[in-house]
Image 1 (cartoon, rainbow, N blue to C red):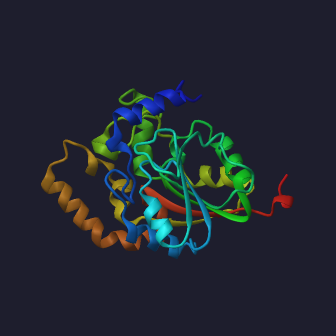
Image 2: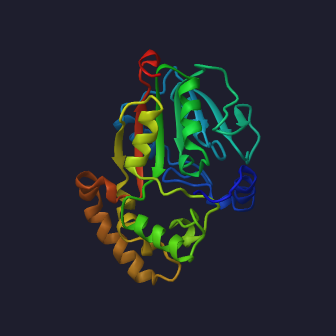
Image 3: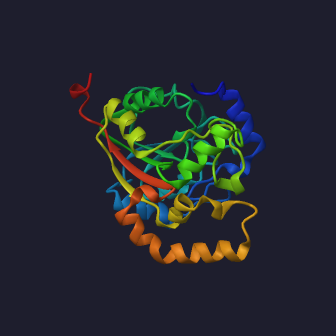
Length: 260
């Protein structure tokens, strides 16, 4: 059973912990434009001329990247950190948009915080046009980090669905232990393809040795572990993508008439 969290509690958490609004692409103080565009390119996405919804947009830093590539940007989040014309406050589980309004949904490190991901997937499908797609960046817990998360939450060292290696193991308000199997099942059941994934080589170290982010880890040892995985990470990301703490996904909408 899921813990008794509410949307209001999650909103309050990010209002009081704004530095936790982050991902491999940035999000706290800016965005890693080159990494974002490189990942999209490798997954076969095009932004030009497409209407794009950024769900869980945080501070909306992707707006400048997407518009510079010729896309039409709209951002949505439960907490808005700044005012902008194309940023909307709302819930992914009940999107305030008409049917078939967008060509592409971008959801960067927000999906694992949704209390009802099945509802979010249904809403994604509703607001996407035929032939639309989803880009997801999601923490992956089908690795050693997942075992640590399970143990910390099971033993009471962290609240249920509260442990994450981000921010020096600072407890989250809600961090569901998403895996490739769970994510694919959710999206396929909701009418999307099986999905194409990429592993993030820089986070192989955290996926296999999450103690590297522990605040008591000696800095010299931390740097040595990161240096070692910096060499072997790219190879491991190709042969064992499940090892990375982050996976990047592309899911395409099946023809709506083919899914009941």
